Structures are given as structure tokens and as C-alpha cells.
Image (cartoon, rainbow, N blue to C red; front, side, top):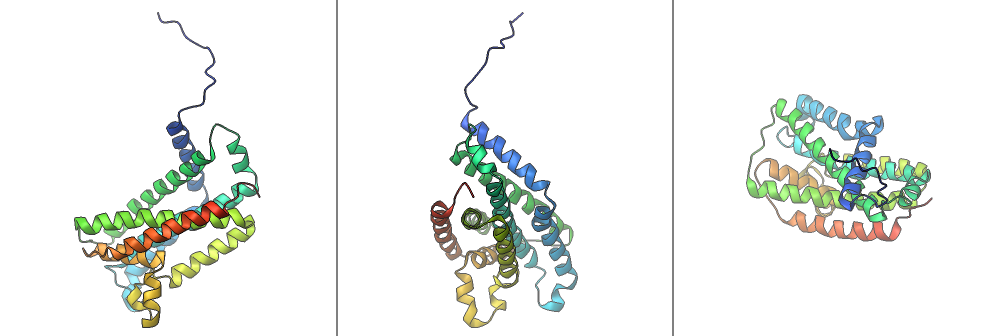
Length: 254
């Protein structure tokens, strides 16, 4: 019989295990938060169902609406939810205390990124399944699908970078108000839900150059089997800028 070794093992867990464990905790906390579930799933699915039922009466194309809703869902999770949660973690000293554990600051950021990406993937699966049940049949075209995936990842980085910059600078209550206000403004007029072509001519190119407009247009094009690489360049530039801003603006303590 092998002897049971109960001697202490003072070393911390491997870095990959620390990051995965922190990501699991972050994701579980987000999924237990009713407000975040409202932003992540309830509002997008409600908009999807309403759009399918009455969308044509208000000028929404049912063939493009699910892609627009997916863009909105990615925006809500990677910007609004992340900004609000991080701001309150900073306010209550959670981030400061976590840094005192074997988790480094890089581990904390990586864990948040992994949790956000995991929730975004879950959102896409659920919303796509609901859309499919409602009759959505996207055109499957490999180059378009690859561009859509890369665009989504770049958009997640850009939105998350600005979310961390916001959460790292403002008080928690101010972050809550600003994040929700920006969410509503972008959802209503940022070319996420409505195609760029639905806006006045003078507004179309400025909207195409925003990260939300670039993401929305890419996903809508991909849903009909079309592709345009230009939004990838736009999103890559925004992602780089967002990371730079987050690095300069984010503070771990309130």
C-alpha cells in the first residue's frame, strides 16, 4: 500500500490553473447577477423575438436582425457588464485583495478576459439557437465566417479595453450610470441593431469607422454569405487604442 503524503505544498498553483480558476469564478458571479443576465440574454432575445414578429413593420430585415442582435449581445457583455462589475470590485477593494493572493495582475486581467469570452460564446450559441428556431437560416460561407469570428474577437478586445478604462477611472456609481447610458446610445444609434444604410448619408461613413458599426456590418454581411475585410482593420485599430487607453487609465484601487 502506498503511504499517504500529507506534507505541505507551499507553492502556488500553475499559472494556467490560476487563470482558469479565476475565470470560472468571474463567470459564475456574472451568471448569478440578474442585471447582467438581463443585459446578456433577456434584452437581446426579447429584441430578437419582437423583431421577428413586427420587425418588417418598422423597417427591420428579419434576415439580418439575428446578426444585429448578436452584435448587441457582444457589446453588452464585453463593455457594459464588464465595466459595472469591475467598478464595484474596485470600490469594495476586491481587486486590491486579489492581488495579494498568488494571482498576479496579469492573471486577473487574463481571468476576466477568459470569463468574458466564455460568456460571449455562450450568448452566441443561445441567441443563434433561438434565432434558428424562429426561422433564421444564415448563409454558410467559410471566408465570411472566419472574418466574422476574427471581427468579434477584436471587438471584444476593444470593448473590454474601454470598459476597464471607464471602470478604472470613475467611481462605481458614475460607472454604472455612464455604462448604461453608453449602452443605450450605442444600441439605439450606433449601427449595432440597424444597418448603416438605414442612417442618413452624412452619418454612414462615421458609423462605419466606429467599432460597433464595424462589428454590426461584419456580422450582418457574414449572415448572408458576404465579406468585407475593411472592418477588420478598423476593429484592429480600435482594439490597439483601447488596450493603450486601459493600460494608462486603469487603477486597481479606488
